[in-house]
Image (cartoon, rainbow, N blue to C red):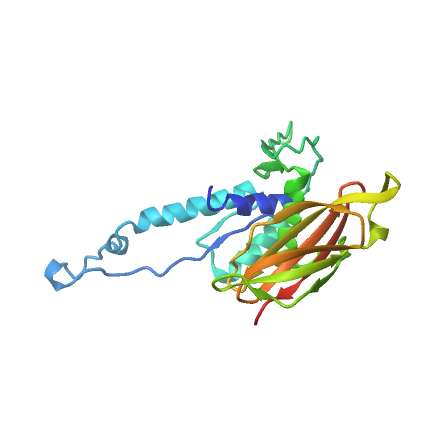
Length: 263
């Protein structure tokens, strides 16, 4: 659960069902040598040639069953390559998809889902493991991470950023000055002591070509003008980056994605 739990939670969050496929492996017909003295008619058990092979296979199959059942899918164990997709199509050809919107507390707690079919013995029900009632901060962090992997979400508004020349910041590291241009037309400003002010949330994350991802940095920034300046400290290599600005008063999200650093 520690290894694949995040995969299950993400699949349930975005509405994906997993159909993991385990193709049958090659069986070894004979495992031994002449010193073992087997009669030609005797066929030793090939599985015995690999200590722990059955235990490993059971572990893999149990994991695939758990991935499928936790997300409302179906495990395809020892499935033929040309038949696996057909079984998925057959399983999803005729079904009712039932969804609901639970009362939100935004407490980052996990809640199980239980479905009972009263009086319908002819129907089968598969459910997701549950759902995580994410806080708004957690949800915005995940939105930034998703943009890093999959690009800007459709509802995101563009955010203009400018990078200056990087400077040396230690062994194999660089610091890149960043200027974020915040469009005030998209931000709710409030009159405070004769000025129009606001506070926005700025999140920054980056990932190198090896998939090494930085944690999402978070800062609440008072806005009294158009520009916000910060520095990105990165390893001396090319990175994909995401910078987001969130206005908590309106729910507006502005996003900038791209690449930065030496290629």
